[in-house]
Amino acid sequence: MRTRSKHGSFAEKKRNPNSLFCPFFKLDFCLVTLYNSEAEGFASVAQRQSSGFVNRRSSVQVRPLALSLLGKAPVRKIAVVADSTCCLPPELVQKYNIRLVPLYIVYKGKSYRDGVNITPSEVYKIMRRRKELPTTSTASVGDFLDAYREASRKADSVLCITLTGVQSKVFEAAMVAKEQAKEVLPETTIEVLDSRAVAGALGFVVLEAARAADRGADLTQVGNVARTMMGKVCLLAMVDTLYFLAKTGRIARAAHWAGSLLDMKPVLEHIPAIGETMPVARPRTRKKAVELMLKLMAERVGNNTARVIVHHADELEDGEKLKAEIGKRFRCAELYLTEFTPAMGIHAGPGVLAISFWAD
Image (cartoon, rainbow, N blue to C red):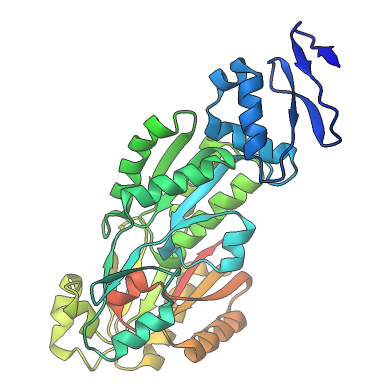
């Protein structure tokens, strides 16, 4: 049978129990048959049924609405994209639909995607041999463009948050991808934010932005949440040796310590206000270094509630001990343990213990 819409045009109703008669915004009603393969057929038929619909939104933008109507993936205002150095627990990445773009680990001429086809443990075991050390490479423009394309299928806008641009080219790649996306994803608004943070400090910026997006905040609001977090987060790290920093050319800031590479356990700090990782002290033992990190954390947290991620580079037992000690000393609303991203650990070396945190 034929049914007249309120705007006067007709759409043919198929005698199919899986059919849906649906309005798209203020456009003509259209009747489409739902397909089982995600919502590809749904989007395709919708485009043919209503030329006005296609004019307003690209085919990429049809998909989120189609999936929502199928009950498979609700349309979100904002999707959050980040790079793989953020050291977030996998369950939080999944819960808040954070799209991670992996950096590359290069070993013996072959490139591996951080956390995808090589694990942190595998990287650190290679490094402990101190032969043919792996190197790192930034994610490509194409990697970020693919992430934006995927995110646009589930949200109207995208916020990409990267590690500090002072120590990496990741932010630049994300920005170039944003410019290219203007041609291939014209209906998607994309913003790129240099967090000036690293590891779990970056992770907390990303996490709070994703939580705001999950609550339905718009792009401006989510961006403001991320920028506010940049002023709160901090990373403290203990390096087991300066050997790897020297081998990878990252020792400039600690050059005055180079005379005793094997005898110290340097403590480093990274805060977004500076955007660089800076030396703090040079204890002679791991125990003293850990105690110093806890002391510095106490000074910054005070009596406030803390949110903490403990990181370890192939030192699970020590990482668990540090997490337990933090749980005893501080009032923690959140306390996690994750592996230290090898995209950074390649420069710092195995044996790293680190604490990323912020206080309410």
